[in-house]
Amino acid sequence: MSRDEYRRALDAAVREYEQLSAERVSLDARISQLQHSIAALTKLCGFEPTVPLGLTDACRLVLRNSPSPLTALEVRDRLVSIGLDLAKYSNPLASIHTVLKRMRVSGELVERDRDEDDRTAYASVLPGVGFVVSHGRRHVRGQGLTPPKDRKK
Image (cartoon, rainbow, N blue to C red; front, side, top):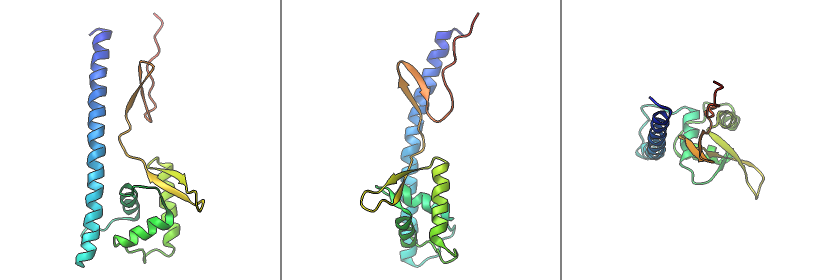
């Protein structure tokens, strides 16, 4: 195969990757909404969840369904509202802070400052950040890849 054929194959793969990533973002958002609905409806019906959510998954669920960034206190309140039992934690707010900070370090969340009270709020970063075109070259965000340099012959 020639270099042009490789580039066409790369362009096709990148286009497909971008399309599938966008579909995944849409599916992840819908799954998150359904998980939230199921948790709330389960509580309202008086049922016990068959698969209890862990604190990290529950925080992830709450933040993905929030249209705006949330503080740790707001996350706690929403966790209680969907029926998560925080009584098993000696200090639930400290546990939530720990989870939020770990999620931020892993890149799942970003920190936002609130204007009125200067508390740190967290917003979910949607998965599937893919390729962007810049100056005629394709770059990969968050993947640690750059275009190869021309080799000396």
